[in-house]
Image 1 (cartoon, rainbow, N blue to C red):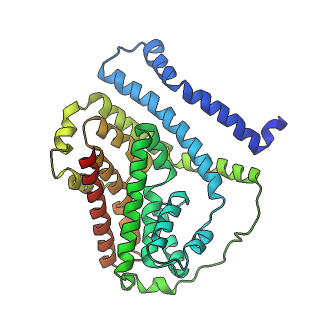
Image 2 (cartoon, rainbow, N blue to C red; image 1 turned 90 degrees about the horizontal axis):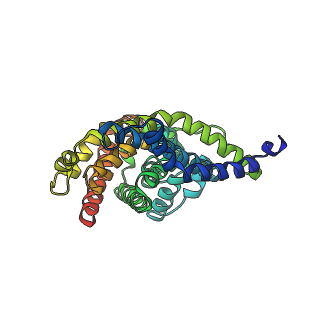
Length: 340
């Protein structure tokens, strides 16, 4: 069909189908559980399965839509263009810009070394570089989609703004302390290879095609984490007693936020794997500040990222980075627990 040969037509058809699927998702999942399978309502397994069969398609629908939109937006950005935007910017203003750019650019902790090298070579101050590196994995479209789907807009906006606050403040402090001496000497001697042509003009249809490619690439890489994360969350939803986690990490315990961070740092997961678990933590009585502190520590202070950064940073700067970000997460956790 000629109609489906144009990406813009595919996009319009997709949006119609997406809206219909999302509108009837709850009815469809209840129909499967209550009518087709005829499971007894209220049982642990039934409610765990109901949670799973509703959350998996909901998360994937939201994920596909947002990745498509962000994938199109990302065609207007590249690593070189990002570096040019940040180059020469004063401290703090540069930290703010870097943190916001981290949200819309396609980088994660696995990209830490090449990004760090590219930013340093472009003359971008180390503090601004850190604001970008903290924000990029912590606040991305996957995290935003899952948070919206599982918590709603209020918690999502809280997470975005507190994540930005941590990225901006941490990068600014690292810049103020002038910690370039703790970067490995060879980093400043690296010269990058050829630079891609950022001035190449592409049509909007081509941008849509690249957005579709981004959906295939990202969903193809993380779908298993989403399914496993929701499966763990479903089990906890159906079987974990209501007061177990609230007694361990509830608001009454002063140590709940630091404990959540200590548990989170050694773990390795992306947003797709950890957010469904965080959703159940909150459902079971863990306060929002403690739960989001746990999530931030897993995504923003993971042990694998620290190991990766060891290749370009001396241990002193890594320690300062971890301490500053951890203190920021603790403050945010206690503040949210106080407010909510």
